[in-house]
Length: 102
Image 1: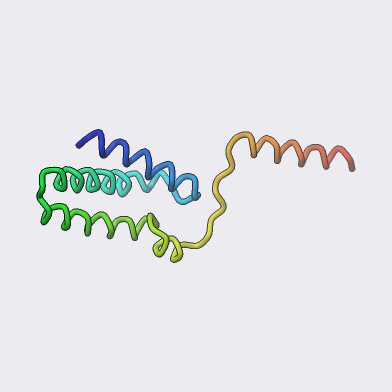
Image 2 (image 1 turned 135 degrees about the vertical axis):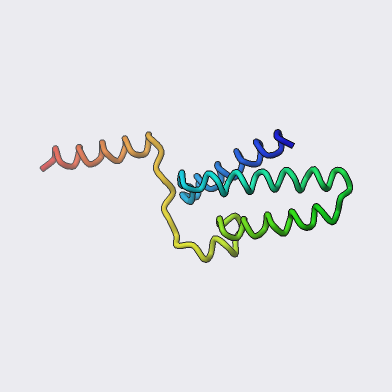
């Protein structure tokens, strides 16, 4: 189960970060989502369909709060994804180049 949780945590963190929707304050909720996902998958593998259904419902509630599906993201204000270091450096370089032309 820990492997499933860790893999899902990495997946969620990557997707939310890419969309500019991740903050350090989200760590607890992200961990909960990944853990519940792993528990749901474990319940499914062990043929505990009632447990799987309950955990899936809980996961979907967290997903809605975190913007992990299209309808939930529509409720969040649009954010520009954070620039990576290369983009920031290029933007800074362009600003310096423009200033030098003046």
